Length: 285
Length: 208
Image (cartoon, rainbow over all chains, first blue to last red; front, side, top):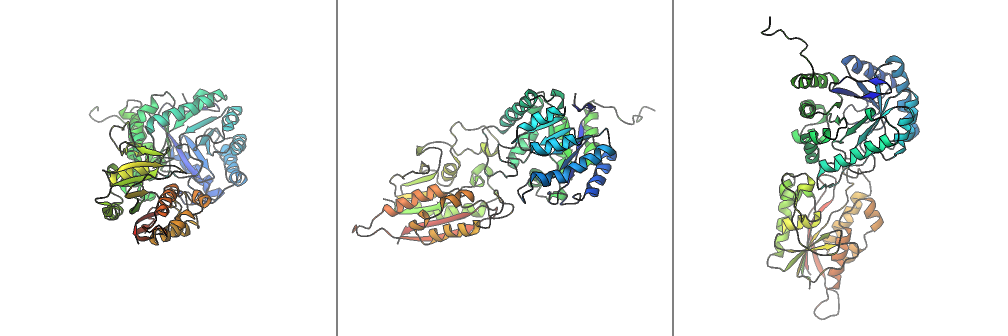
């Protein structure tokens, strides 16, 4: 069961739509940096069927420093406006800062998506104080917004499982509800392409931990390197990885392409017998 | 009595199981290393501990498929083993002296901040620092290697500083047969580039 501040999510595979209030994220490159553009994007992804919207104010890659105040300026108002416009949607905010987490939770967010392995562990207590959820992500033990350089693991999957389940237990110990915790192996974060492929192939090892798994695969470099394609050419590769992970039991998929991702997940869910065909008359009439 | 030094970088891409992206770099390395043919050569590279090491050039920690080796080498020595399989391996730490050997394969890297997409992101000081390294190696100048700024090197994610300092110290310790003056070195740089934002340099030093 997944529940964030009382909002219960269906037992199907789920889509977390990416909404970047950044001028420099790798795929959309500022397309939704403006307040109205970000709000329009939220309306669009909610209409398309997204279960969660994930609002971010700082791009993951190295680049211009964004202060906590600037980050809050970018995301808090969006959260307030989205909360008012979409009372039932689960609002996630992509931040590694506890201070920003506190402000967005006060503004109505439900989930803190920390992609950097909890560099500010007080985030857990902050989330708990609002009854909100957290994402516990493996980032290769790197500092926020740094790139991997020759990282190596005796067993990358074991390292990920140990790290994210340890973070999840810490979150629960800090007061976060068990049904409000997601684990994320952090594709590309502190990993080379082969590491990310191994994690994709062994999604079931993460699922076996019992924690619901979030996969953030969308148009990432591991897809780009496998296919030697640029971000705007990575949809099919992303969807292939999405299907492989969903089949093994990953629950939530952070995505740029909401409609396409939802259709893949509905198909996988039907193959798994989790959902019924929407139409089912062929040969039965 | 060191008589030949060869300098190569150590991207994991040079390991056999991960090859492909840097075939031209590998060829240049192999050509440079050929001057060690017939030498009693030792591979020297950064290692958690100082001293002789035995082990396997294992690429599985970098995501290669297959069973992991129980005796995987540190990266620089793994790359050295791949390029010069018959040589002994010696691990270098910050303060290491090198063993006596006729030939040294010195495995180390320049900055990792040459471009915006570099592992350490762009730093405008990186290209100049790599040029200093290249110049020291081209001129066979151990003093210049020893003069590299360790604080800046750390900031620029330079991987080769310790091993270069150890090699430079060994090179300076050589004296001419008359005992009057330090041995001189003739340097040649075969490659100096940063195709992925990390400074690679391949060079040889022979007696002047």
